[in-house]
Length: 596
Image (cartoon, rainbow, N blue to C red; front, side):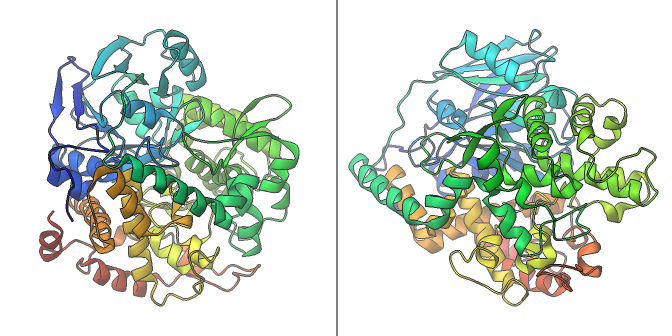
């Protein structure tokens, strides 16, 4: 790989600021060409910076713990490039974690002249950070503490009209382990409890207000590339049609038809009223208009309205989490629970899953509080109780793993490494099952979205029931996803574009040329570095495990019936592909080869 015009830096703003909110001390974090080339930005560079600064035994709520907000070299320039990544150690899982969010915050943050910010320390009283061109100021947030994310955003944009705001709600203030960071009101960096880390630092919000231009290596080439990217996005059936017309909930009927829509805490794979909570039904009864993140032609977002409220969403995962997962078919109640999670700052996947775990615990006689399948009336109160840790909410705020362990039935928590699984039953998709198990941040579909080839036939159809060859496919998709998260772009572009197209974007913007193999090695390096941290934190093969339900209990209806996950064989093959030992620890040879 070579760099054009080596005296200039393009794509990156070439400045990362570090601030200790305990005393206001600021410094510039030095990033050299080698680090940029090896880790890009966003998730990759964030993981590198974090693992250099923080040991694997650090308490996520310690004042010494860092939380890092980063953009990438393509932020603000390429379609879908309004995103940013948040990196820290998760208080929910103990793993290294990154959470991603769209909207416009990432673009505005980068236009302040910095690629990102590293935050350490703990403020004595509530604060927010005001980031303007090349400058960070600590401001008093005492009047904002206790406000929800919408109220916080409105108060701060009234004061700074052109700003974009990322903030926590009461859930983050109360350090609920799965609290989210919300930006632009309804966009969420949700998974892993990054909002709780902010709350532990008394950091209510980050306000970005920038005016700077982003340098580009080849401006004319970028214009031509944007035309090409527009064509690729438009002609792909997922990015050009399905997501625009029906949003992410276009998947509801599809996954249900494949017999793998998790129902009543993954006890079944078919929900009898999937149509009633589908993207088609949302479009029919709730949709006000389509919405999009910065510079995004896909426009998968939904602005919706119920009789009582309006807001963004719900997305597929949120509809499922408060719908099929709980046996609830009341679309209004589901949508309003989603709105409330956005306002209070909660991860909808974990919130719904934890309630579902509690419902099954009650069903099995192991939970003292009455929670029944299909009871939509209780949703709003449960969400509020979780955010404020009051009553039953204090227990639900633990997340499903800790809750199920407390009541002696750990097998009823549908999680991996403490992070709750999303809306695809792994018994119907062997590759996705392996992806869940080996995800560095825990039970997650976004480390490798094997649903694309196994269910949607993108970029090709593969046998979803077979475990053969899945190790290589999962590792490849994990590496590509790490690259996309480090540029920082939306994962939906992976439907329409190959690794070669991502390499072309990077070259036009930064002047750095990668071969496909070199760029994939960047992804492999990032994934292996994450795994190294987790290994040092005590995670081993035993943690690359699914709940026993998926290996022992066959689904009894639908097109995935009579299936279980065959994990052990796939794990052995996966570790071999990765160059890790039999316990899932990266070997010295692998780390040396990747320059870790």
